[in-house]
Image 1 (cartoon, rainbow, N blue to C red):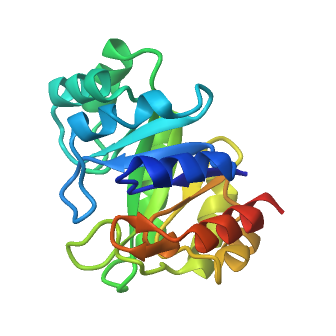
Image 2 (image 1 turned 90 degrees about the vertical axis):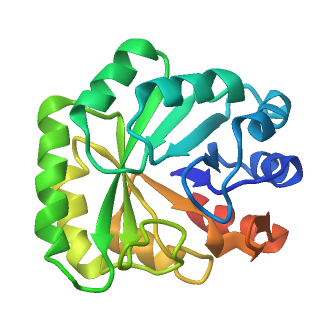
Length: 220
């Protein structure tokens, strides 16, 4: 199973995640208490193994800003967190043909909408137009669309994952941690998983033991 350790802010955590077997290291360029700059990430990525993905999480819809950050920070993967925008993904595919694209979709964890229907409709669009290589399903709580540490309704998501997971690489995120990861995988059977706060000792600083256990569970 593909595993991304996200919201990484320092070289030590990035190296540890890579050593423990993560497939991707994520860096948040969107508004967040774990936000980093391209300059900071540029001091980390050259020290990571060549085969590991270096993923940037962006809320912006400016292709120019994303391309500039990818070049400066040494990224290999772009995660779009600001809503589905086929025009943006199309432009990025033209300008960054070697980059892997992850489209984030948000599942309302507070029950404020029929997320199963809303997410399925967006997945259908992505499947139809090939807008992204992968799709990440994250929790939304009110206006907060990432790093909430809150899970969404996995039972409701199960059928959505099953229906679209045959053709799309779907990544589960949102409130995952060592204590619930096995259940999440068993219910949703995602192609990959993504974790940030669930393996932290403090915001922006990973907990080595939590990181180790999370990756062990993901690999079993």
